[in-house]
Image 1: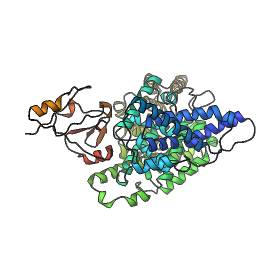
Image 2: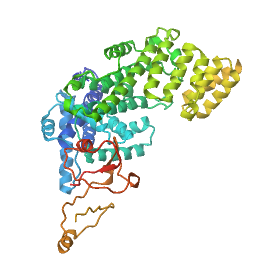
Image 3: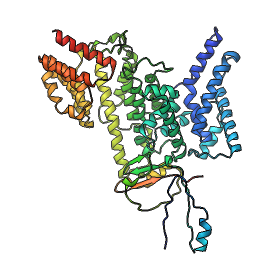
Length: 455
Length: 93
């Protein structure tokens, strides 16, 4: 994230003020939350105060003009809110549990006057706190979307397909736990960093895919979650340079996101990869991802950066070695997925896709993860490279491993159809239709079935 | 003889404990009220779970009272493999 100053252009003051609020929200939300938690050790108050400060900015900036330093303005406003709340609490003699913040950090955060100038550490601490392993995985995603990305409860609820009241209750519980179970507001020590980065990466990936569910319907969001997830990874890659898991995931998400404008047609119907207009893929992002993958080398992904070198040599006991091994595995998994996505992204046309390379990458990925979902994808690649029969034989046993997954019968149907077994293919499409939940994918399967019946 | 007493329940009435202990020749060596169950972390092998321990985790085996900078330090101290479960809660206050 850069510290681009907010440019206020001449013209409609209300519009430029609104644009300044949006820009400040992008630049400063998580920094402000991080600074306030650093100073006051109260995640609940920090969140309310920053929300209030932005509301106040939305009210005052159109009338009074955008301040020369919006970040400093927001920090002052938010800090005042926290102090007001703390005062009224002490009148009530209410004693809330505090988050674990060390004294030095607290002093530094209290002295900061501009969230743009003093942020890197607070942002990292905030990410690691929200993704702490002592929080339930669903809570990590919700807290990260709220505290780090800055989405509202309603937006998070829609993205994660949960009722808003349920999401509000979950966030309240998670915030309480974040504040009072002893979770530190701290960057983990070097020996634990990779293990904890894996947790962070998993959360970011979940956040990214939750913004990408086809068939969720028109969701009016202030942000594109894909952009936000990529932005967050760029911040992490900047703050902790050269960590394999961050870089590999950044490459993967850039590649997936580069196709965003071609995934649905004008009617909102799903467009499959071979039929997408490659001219509308974002080439700059593909090039960046390919460059990132090249920087990761060809071997197993290892931590490359300074943190690996500064790791305490005494700390390399059996347990740390084991976690380091696991860390390498997740980075490697993302790297293989990204390499597969890069094959698709760099093929000049769908027919030029190097399916043999992709099938080999999927075989590597399946050996690494043992995942039946990977096997399914591998079956598709093998069918493209070596014919439908070779793909069909890889589907054996997958119905038991993925009993509710419509793609198993859908892929079988497609391969049976190509192998010249229309009746069996039709039966498999009908089976897939009993399992599919996404309207866009249902429409696609129905069209395949009717095409089969007509031929 | 030293005893461990576990206090259980959402609210616990242990009023008058100190004076009764003095009358009965009992010394209270340590007494801490922990934060509510929502703050509990249960450590099972390498996993940190966001719940209190329960009967499924086995019978009571012991009590540790630790002074640590934060939850991470406690998780580092607890055995990361082998049998048993550890419920960790901050002391209230």
